[in-house]
Image (cartoon, rainbow, N blue to C red; front, side, top):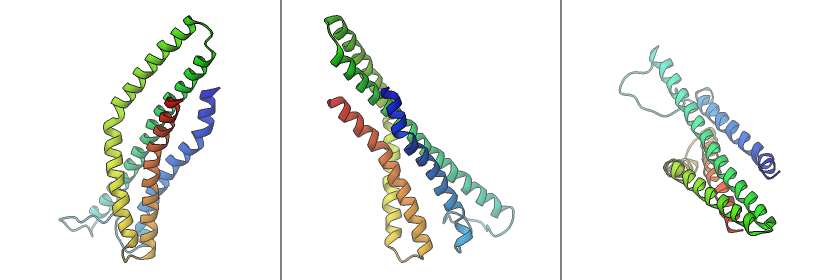
Length: 188
């Protein structure tokens, strides 16, 4: 029942987040359609890119990298799911602990708690560098994207940067929300 409640509570947010990541990438890739730039990003190359097949290859490469970044943002939901699963298990353990009626049931709860602490330590060890790298790069993206919002840019570029900054901010939230929920559950 507890796990089902967690799934029902967060499934739409996670699905919308993944969908939003790919829509943001598609919006960036379509940038040359509504702006004067040739490619989705403002990269400068040490060779002429005005001729085929260079033009198409570079456009395809930048598009592919954008979708790879979106897929990486999808990994954030997996990290969030791991943290939410551990949180749900702590909640289940709390219920079992409150319902314990004798010493043997209490000992079972203690053993489960030890296993759960080991599990959360494994999660922490496996995701700590991913979380550090993601938060560092995403924070930098938010800062520099926000600088473009206050710069003298055309409205369409400001809109593009606003969408990217919003997406990056949601990515930071994707890590903070389940971690905060787990901390609150552990304190109960």
